[in-house]
Length: 128
Image 1 (cartoon, rainbow, N blue to C red):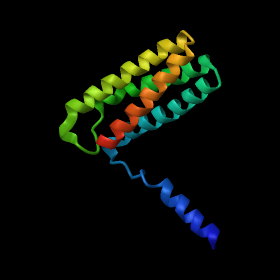
Image 2 (image 1 turned 90 degrees about the horizontal axis):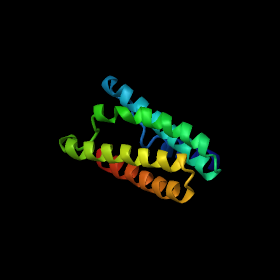
Image 3 (image 1 turned 135 degrees about the horizontal axis):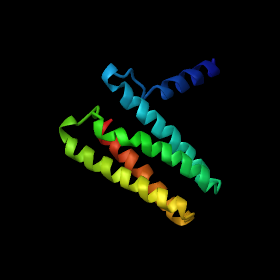
Image 4 (image 1 turned 120 degrees about the horizontal axis):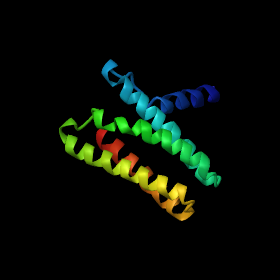
């Protein structure tokens, strides 16, 4: 009985942010999925001191993030100028992180990783 309750909670918690994307938003969701997976891989590589692996993951993430300009927010669609500004800042931070990775600057990669994490939370809280 406890297992069922816990299992039900886990399933409910897992689906909190999931929804069926509209057909028009399929590529948007795909890009965000790739971005998220590559970001997790990049952070893991940075934690392990694997700058080469981090650079590969970040490069894939940057490629997926290029499509941000085509995104349509789920919420606050009237704030497209703010969305574009946040998208531009996000891409600039990814470029700065790429440079820090090439230079193997651990302190800078840690700082920029936190900035990027915060920007994701900020954007998702307003537009998702």
